[in-house]
Amino acid sequence: MTFRRILFATDFSPASRAAFRVAVELARRERGRLVIAHVLPSVVSLGVETYVSARMYEEMETSARRWAQKRLDSLVEQARRSRVAARTVLLAGAADEGVSSAAAKERADLIVIGTHGRTGLERVFMGSVAARIIGTAPCPVLTIRPRRSSKR
Image: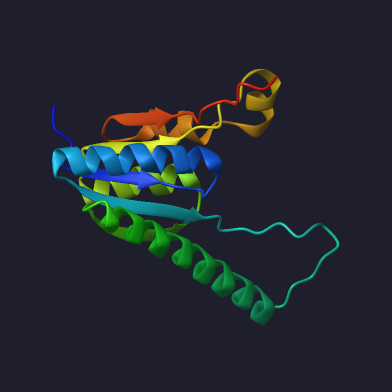
């Protein structure tokens, strides 16, 4: 099976950095195209007692979009230095829904995502975006766990 259209989803975490390296290598080896996606959360929780005006909310949203786009653009440059055609998609909403719908829209052959490797109670309380993406994705999903330090 060849993976010519690869969607790499990032939350800019260390887990995502490890997955990015794999996505770039796969795209380079397959002579494929890489779509680098990030999903901004649609609701920012500031606490129960906090009031934010519409103007302030718009400014926060604009700032978050600029920050994320700058990070995405940096990843595109890294991919291009590896001779991989890449572009970005910046979405808003729930991460799992955004990634799955972007993969469908882009007709992706593969989704590459990092996973934090949470287990037990941490996974129960924090959830697993990766697991939800796997459950709803229109194509195969490759999850990459970052290497663990040998110091314990």
